Image 1 (tube, helix red, strand yellow):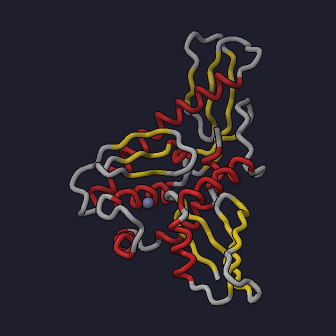
Image 2 (cartoon, rainbow, N blue to C red):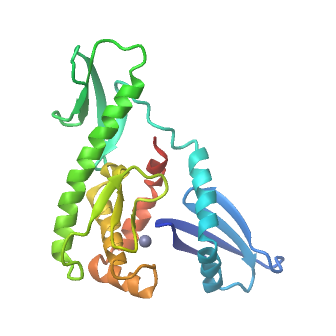
Image 3 (cartoon, rainbow, N blue to C red):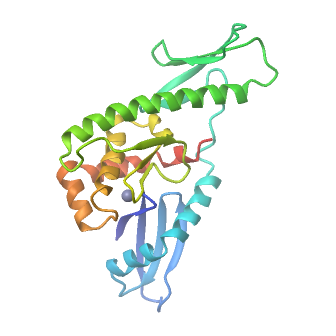
Length: 245
Ligand SMILES: [Zn+2]
């Protein structure tokens, strides 16, 4: 059997193997940043395993983060001419022009490309390209969240006005909601297809009503986004983006 449970707002798949020869201890194998294999004694119930995971959420989060950082499948992008970065789920090619500009900048005027204007030939342009790409992504993320929140809050009756939010690069979660109802939204979301951005934002907006991931929270998700479980599974595939620098 298997189940999906959020660890610090990131869905993680737990594959469970019930083993006759195990007496009491549960074996835990971290297989990927979003996948854990549990070996449990034959009579263990799903509820017991979920409770065990909840009780040790901090520790799971710590271990999965280490796995994400060590994962060879998600090499950090190289910030150089010809490389691809994801944008709204589509690849954008970096095109670097050394045009002697006094104002280094990133502009996305052509389809499928992000053009970077740099002053003259640099010995090592990568740090500057990275800085330009990331600040462009931050600006794009602000526009994305402004539009998405405005649309979603118009559709959701328990959110009378757009809540306070800020955008920042985060390494362990797509979004979060604190006790005062302020949202923190991950800049990396600018790389996701819109339906997945909607999923993360609806999830955070549901936290304005229920701070946990219990039955009532899930009921609210079901009501507003009936296919949220599919989106959650799809979002899992993009988890490696969180490790990008
Ligand atoms: Zn959550």
